[in-house]
Length: 293
Image 1: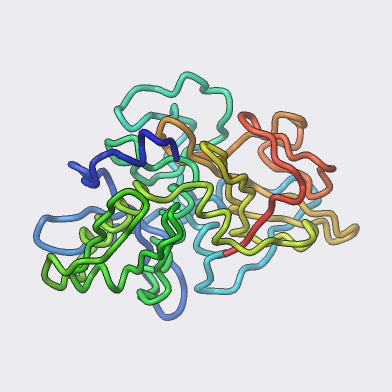
Image 2: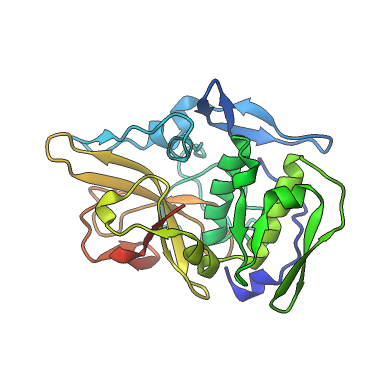
């Protein structure tokens, strides 16, 4: 998150196809959602053949790793993709200058402010999963100041009063459990959180060989960067594994699946045995920068 984004107004004027997923009989079902001003979003059936898991097949000889039903891992693999390979759009509707980095675009809105950047997009995905699962008490993220922002406090009507580096919470609104209120909460988190705070909040993964879907390569800083693992596959005969990555970037833009710039034949998959540096189209991470919620 850039410093300019951290001071942007905490209000998104319009919402375009907000995404949530509904748990039905303990199984996560991917869906695109629309919202009426009077209530929470209503699910619209998502074609199963347009999810990450269905459209982005593992390389020959590899099989997708199983994910526990209802888990964050399964939820990520069932994120819906926009048809074909459309351009990545910025928050203001313009096309991103670099259109060579992405393999596909995830069908989730970015809002119309320069807020949902790299770490914010990962916060958005994690928050959407927890909200759809009804795990409201688990929805909390830290501001860069280190102050914790709990969604349950937010929906009780408390709002942060930020003065310099000091944050206090003031009761200033009635209790509201709507999806729109949840999105307002996320918008405020986007303003005051970023790679620095998210990196400090996540737990290190000591050995990259222990990677799981949902893990995050992240370098905290201003700006820093972060990408998230959204699927994995394995060769049954050798145990070799590969993974898919998704990101947003600066300025705020559509969340998209990344190509593998070092191996076009394996792309968009990345080998788990990538060495000491993970090179993505627009950023290079160290092997020890893998973390987990």
